[in-house]
Image (cartoon, rainbow, N blue to C red; front, side, top):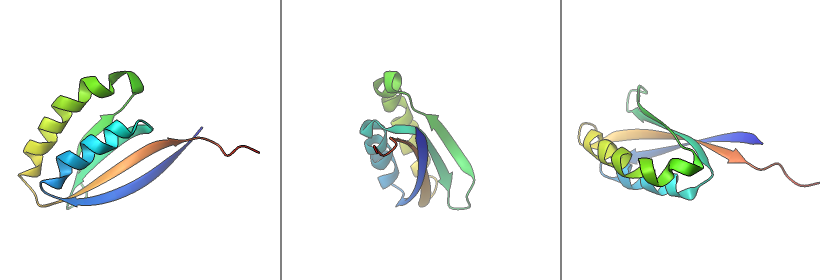
Length: 85
């Protein structure tokens, strides 16, 4: 399996909602939240078994952090299935 990375830019209040959506997608390996200066604020390793367990407290912490800055970057690492021959 290979891993792909993508970066999503969001503003303030969108941060918590977007992270909740990303975690629920299921093929996510890790979510990294960075502030406007590019500093890592939070790194969330996501595994299939703990998605529901970590989603609520993580989203609460993210929502609290969103009030401190207006612009955020979310880096998402996803598992990508190899193409079938």
